[in-house]
Length: 178
Image (tube, rainbow, N blue to C red; front, side, top):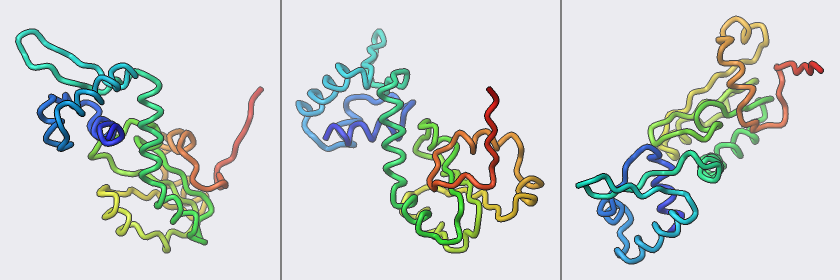
């Protein structure tokens, strides 16, 4: 049950959750919800805020490393089947998740940004969009010259900092300056 509560906060990180709304969403008893919210407060996963003269609400404690790490891991777990599929596509040399899902700051309406180097003809984009309820943006290239012409240079650092789904980082060149 605690994981279900966490999912609500992961998917709507900025939302102010009132106790009654959480009850409606989760369909559990007041006592159980109160118990789990107290646990999550003790773990510094959520804050309880009581504005003067208003009803209290709960918000995600997104400043803590614990929340950010758990949210990022949860997001990657959501995409596990997609990653398996991409690794099984023979024509793909490199696949990198970048953008909000790679950083862990995605929301319920975020799309999924994927850089693919190679042949994406086997990628079942529509099936995974339906399963995940999210749009998938593919940035696909099969030729380094074409990529250099078409890919916005400002996007390259975001791709490089992304989550590497495949082991290869072709066509990128890595240089170390010491």
